[in-house]
Figure 1: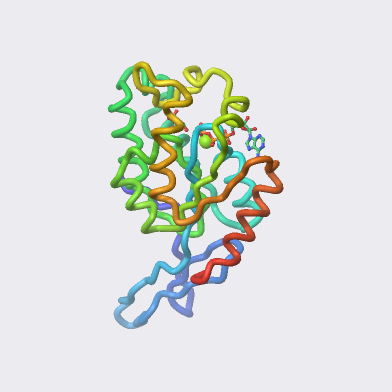
Figure 2: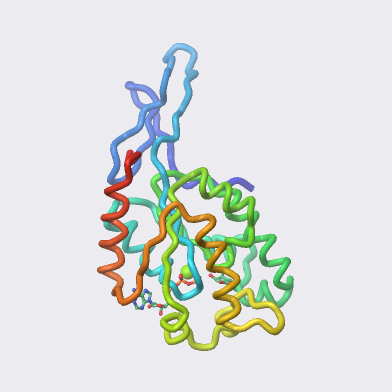
Length: 212
Ligand SMILES: Nc1ncnc2c1ncn2[C@@H]1O[C@H](COP(=O)(O)OP(=O)(O)OP(=O)(O)O)[C@@H](O)[C@H]1O
Ligand SMILES: O=C(O)C1=C[C@@H](O)[C@@H](O)[C@H](O)C1
Ligand SMILES: [Mg+2]
């Protein structure tokens, strides 16, 4: 099922897409008589990726408020779709089953002007990552292993996709190259509190050459 998170509205001026905090984007080449036109998706999303505990959900919601964007947490979308907690999906369907659902949920996201906080394991879904890179700017929130270890308690209790014999260190080493591979931008969050990190991301976005 495709999920659409934005709303179209029709006015005398034609069809517009209302996005909180952003200018209204018009349907291009809109013909009032036929009602035809091409809507150009020119408002990108901001997609946050990174290790579990990197702060994607925490930062994502603050970023959305500051930018006037929508906020989507894909972990919550998965839970709503499956009507089940993440850890219970992992337990009942196994790691592969969970990753398949996560890939599908992320592939199905249709939105614009949204901050999307992904789950830490989203980078195992290559179709999902290709889709997310298409619909927005992918930001990798990078944090050292040492800080993550301190921040995360028992990662098994958190429902992390951890293979047999894997620990936080080997998970970190396996995933870092994948986060780097899929990121448009890498933001080092070492030593930064939530407000500082949020400000750093806003600055980085502000400097993007193709900012819309
Ligand atoms: N900049 C920060 N400094 C210190 N602690 C932080 C920071 N950002 C988030 N945290 C804390 O780290 C923990 C994990 O944050 P959060 O749940 O946002 O991570 P996540 O990246 O969304 O993880 P997951 O992949 O599991 O969804 C929380 O307890 C949160 O309060
Ligand atoms: O990093 C992970 O393996 C995960 C992180 C969470 O956000 C959830 O997506 C899920 O619990 C798996
Ligand atoms: Mg999260």
